[in-house]
Image (cartoon, rainbow, N blue to C red):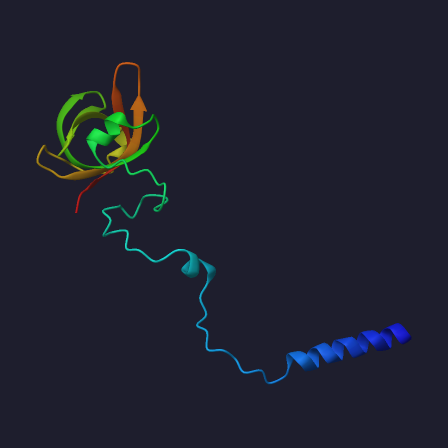
Length: 144
């Protein structure tokens, strides 16, 4: 009986303390992500809205020149022109830094029709072999 009385007394005193009229500070409520990560407009950085992580240590392979030297399986987003069909699913892709062979499977075209003058954006990954470096394309879209 004595234990119940002590517990009841402790519970009521804690409730009474919590209900005191303590002046509230005028602190705006923010979630933890807004405090840790500043909001940035990724479109101003030239990064597509379909990419993954955007922030420190995120790889930025966005030109043919960088793609040629990138590690195998590095994710790339390239904007340029498909200038020639090399046979089967291989095409020559050109941007302002150079040319590279890209492999585009028939299902990855997504209904996009291009000419050598059409500006496109491709998403894919670097495929390094012993003899050459190519890009395996996952999707292709008309550039904005």
